Length: 265
Image 1: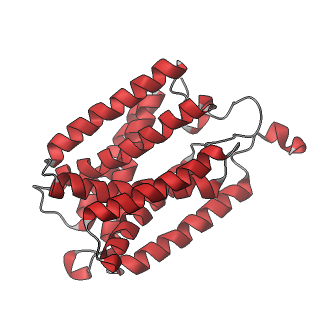
Image 2: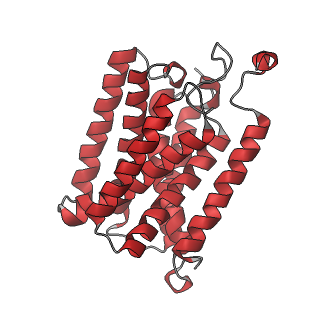
Image 3: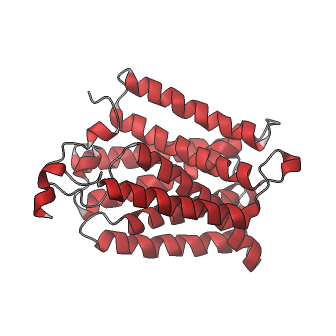
């Protein structure tokens, strides 16, 4: 049993990790930042364009599909393509959750249960197809399709779950943010004590999505409402800069390359 999520991918044969980034601390930091940007960007676009939640959801689904097609066409991991796809998926999840709960009248609890079952079905199909859920084995179009389907479902699940969690709770944006943070800590502890690595990863994937969206709510919310008060535009710009800086620093450390093969690059 590996002791960290990163260790599950450290010994991939073949040198360069072609399509997915190394799952280390930087991976989780950038993912949280992308979900924050996705949520705030979706809200900004909706407000500026004056579009309905359904229209905004369609816009971001189309954007995600376009970026994903480019990502699938690549033969190796390209940070800009991968993280842009993650950001667009997060933006779509924010919009689609609004459509589910407000326009279609699905309760957050029912949506969360249904999406959890859907995620389980996607992972079961992936397991049946590939014989493993290891991220080291995402080396075919079918497996990468399963991966991105799980990503998209996970983000919507995280959104509906956080709406369900806070609907009857009178908490400040900061207090709301603490709930998925503590849940993530619990998953990490369980993982350290031997929880199945793939299941732990996807639970953490869902929870960090919720945390990223809550972080964006806290930073942009007015101070009178318990937030930092930066507003949607400033929050989006600030976190975009943070994504660029962290991604650049991560790339400078070459954590997505097997050191044994650097001489051949």
